[in-house]
Length: 156
View 1 (cartoon, rainbow, N blue to C red):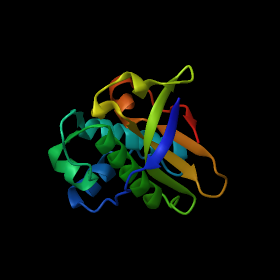
View 2 (view 1 turned 90 degrees about the horizontal axis):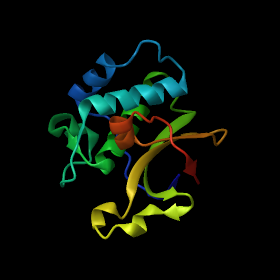
View 3 (view 1 turned 90 degrees about the vertical axis):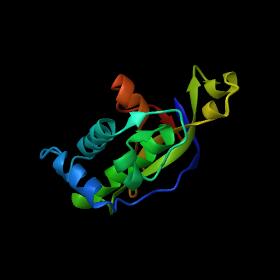
View 4 (view 1 turned 180 degrees about the vertical axis):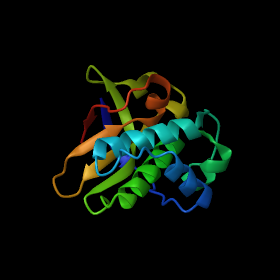
């Protein structure tokens, strides 16, 4: 289970190459289906990024060129891609994607307390929330890239 302890900055897609990449890799069947938009953004994120533990950009517009990211970059890239698609399919008034700083829990235990490295003090993921109903989808783009797990359990 994932629990948010804060939010990261949310970026807008402004890089022309990134816009072309998203448009060129969006399944035509996405339309107004929120789950398909989220999954399409996950697929685009996985295709574009490679995981690294090193210091790197988190701005998705820069990640289009650098292509290497840790969980923060994966989350900001996915959220920006998802928000771009929400605008493209006229769902931005209803839905919004937000990169979250979180903690991972297993059987009710915070897993981060078992790591001494500052790299493991938290883990980023993304929530996609319906502004009207409060319905929330949560995804971990890093885990999706490696384990093909799209939706995750999230506790507000």
